[in-house]
Image (cartoon, rainbow, N blue to C red):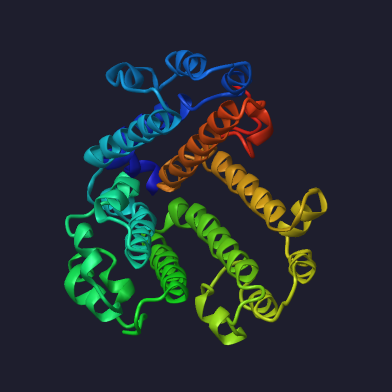
Length: 352
């Protein structure tokens, strides 16, 4: 049925999106960037890519941070254009895709205020896709209850705060718990939303969100090693679905070192195959494995049509592309080869 009706409302935005996807940096672009010896060389090459128009508009690109900001603005511009073309249901889907940026911005503001940083400096570090009208007033909140009552009650994240977070005083530990509880609520809510849409969208997004649930469970486990976070606390932060749910999550909640984590993951495909084929050290190895597998999922999503999963895939591919640029530019500043810092390319196997 979706093959007959999808293009009525969502065909044009999907066509635009696939055009954006075709403009992602390719293996040839990354090879040429490896040969860049200065920031001007990098700007000259990026001017021949999809970032060309954005670079032409801004003449004040004298630092790597300005260049990355310009590339990020290009991504935001493309996303906002897609949002303007979206029908009601796709619009809701795209709005939900911005919730992770909102969560990160909230945590950044609250954490910065705890360390007496200036609000305007923190706002400059916030991601544009996660901005909302009352974000600047986050600095006045003294506890969780005020954070909800004064600021978040009018934001899309209110339902994630209400009933799931206590009114304890804000501390560094509680902020990290807040971040993970918000992400858990977001992932589970997004999963329910996609299930209601049904069809290929539900199928593709179930794969993405199950992976995201597993990745967060693994990250929480690794980050909590050597801390006071007990087994029940960890389980409360894990999502209620995913390849590791429920037995893998229970095992992860009990581990005390990294070797136990890899041993548990080795019993759950595809993580067992990924770990056996990889080499590296501890958390960096796991992060590299997860990033690479996510990009494979993104590439596979574009092999199907008539679903919203391609929009989520594009966001993830674009995020990785910008992380790659940050790696290249950081290496360039240190006079190292940019290639040594890159984890994965946006199109790891296409080589277009």
